[in-house]
Length: 183
Image 1: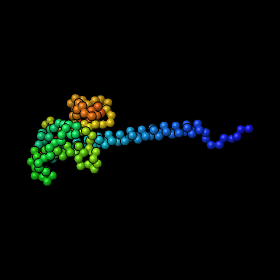
Image 2: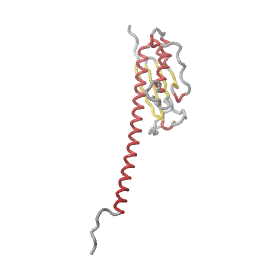
Image 3: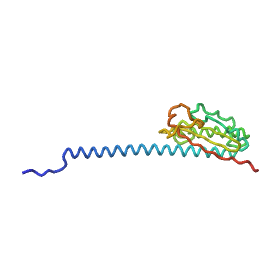
Image 4: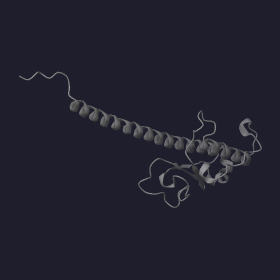
């Protein structure tokens, strides 16, 4: 007569461990993907907020609108803009001084200065401001985790910079009409 088996055999335990480990690996990969997508969404939101911030600065200083045209602002483009001699936070600046102050402050925000963590801001950002009459276009590109489905077009700011992560450059372009002063 055969004795009745109690408990689980070694093969059953090994199969259960294999199934459990495959599931745990899948959950780990899902967590990593979710973290990356969350970071990319945060980067895109930050770029949109920066573009809107610059539009508001332009609306406040319409007299110097054409002087805001700039290319290659940000980390990936080289050295930072020079700090303005005059602090315009207190007011009393000429439109040209305010324009320099605005672009300097905006670049500092683009680079992540003043954020609570040292890695704030966009990753290797490059920004351009195109002014055509009263229409202003802000283009911002930054380094992402994965390449876009189509590479950046030749006219897009940050295209062809050849830096690290050049194949994975993400970008945002926003345009706005800056009206005239009616005061």
